[in-house]
Amino acid sequence: MTTELLEALRKISGPTNVLCDGDLSAWELDWRKRARGKALAVVRPANTQEVAAVVKACAAAGVSLVAQGGNTGLVGGSTPDASGTQVVLSLQRMNAVRQLDAANLSMTVEAGCILQALQQHAENEGFLFPLSLGAEGSCTIGGNLATNAGGTQVVRYGNTRELCLGLEVVTAQGEIWQGLSGLRKDNTGYDLRDLFIGSEGTLGIITAATMKLYPMPAAQLTAWAAVPSMAHAVTLLGLAHQHLGAGLTGFEVMGQFALSLVAKHFPQLRVPFLEAPAAPPGRPEQGTAPSVGSVGTPFCVLLENSDHESEAHAREQLERLLEAAFEQGCVSDAVVAESLTQAHQLWHVRESITLAQAEEGLNIKHDISIAVSRIPEFVQVTDALLEQAIPGVRLVNFGHLGDGNLHYNVQAPADGDAKAFLREREEEVNTIVYDSVARFDGSISAEHGVGSLKLDKLEHHKSPVALGMMRAIKQALDPHKLMNPGRVLRM
Ligand code: FAD
Ligand code: MLT
Ligand code: ZN
Image (cartoon, rainbow, N blue to C red; front, side, top):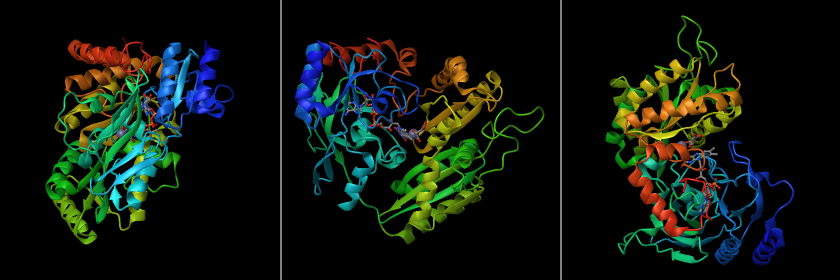
């Protein structure tokens, strides 16, 4: 049966696009190096018809599929399980921009397009495609849609769902659903597009999408501010909304410990307003100040003002905002980037936190969301709970404060073994954090999704009614459980 399937796949996509031997770790090992699977084969179809034929062949053989774009997902959802029986369907070769409709402010693109290439394509045509995240050099638009990715511009433009006008999908039966309308309004029944967005490859394969474009702003100005506490960061956010209105296109918060990891692992980067640590990050000594990254430690904020008038106007607005913020005592120091290069440098520091954390060692990630107004109290309470449970625990707290979305990540104590920490404490840490999130009426995943890492937690935190409806949808669209089984939902 397996030989027959492989032969059929070779016929569909050509022998060089069906990989079974050699080093397949690029497809089998996840970005965080936490999930190593074994694929029966990696298939790289060239177009939608080939995707449909691959799905049909796998369905006939009863073989399940894992869709994969750039393999930058952070929740163990994009790699095969360890059974050696799953086919990885890589969208890498489907990377054409099919159409850019200037009057409709939209572009239709294939699922394997790299996000950065799409930003560049839009810019070359005089438009802005605002989706932006640290993995943009390797993640694909199909993966962004499948995870409903957020990133750093959500405060103004929304997450990937809000940027999508239509989809083309290959169903679990191998049929092609043509939903690539560029329509902004369509109330003809259930919204199928929204079912597939955020479904993490468990309902069908996204092969193409029509995405929104925006006029390119005349100026995008970036400021970096030191704030005395998370509560002050929230006050600054309120001021930024008041002063900048729709011009506020980014509002990121970064804890000092998160920034100290960037400085440690990428010493070539200049990190503004980084405090010299009172003690090496990690276990606080008896009677000394708490280590950086713990309760009360100041934060930095990166904020962006986009303006359709002029750079001078954008700068004036930003300076007025910072003046007001100084007056109210919610900013203790600030710089405004003088050039695009400087702005890129500041964003680069922010985007390097994930990589710096990975360099520091295996860690526990959370991408939670809470109402912005309740975030300071959540952080204070949860920091204290974690520090009490695990003395010396290191909290890497940063994220998209403008959207109420924190990466409330947890690193082993400085002198601890990261692997052992994960093995022995991950469950306890997750329970502390997610129970706290529940007490604050938040969500256990704001942007990375569920994958395999949060399966149990989803079951625990979603209501039986919600889980029942989700299972009914899965059962209706993928009755034979061929689409990324064991991810998102246990059936
Ligand atoms: P993959 O990792 O290949 O796949 C992710 C999931 O989508 C899997 O379940 C997979 O089966 C499914 N999938 C992929 N393609 C398809 C398809 N065509 N059809 C159906 N299902 C598919 N996420 C954020 O939301 N915000 C951030 O700011 C952010 N920053 C990141 C920074 C770094 C450095 C890294 C490594 C990751 C970051 N991520 C972030 C996480 C990640 O979700 C995104 O990088 C991206 O959306 C994943 O795209 P991908 O092409 O790599 O998808
Ligand atoms: C980011 O915003 O940089 C990623 O989503 C965060 C992470 O690495 O947890
Ligand atoms: Zn993020």
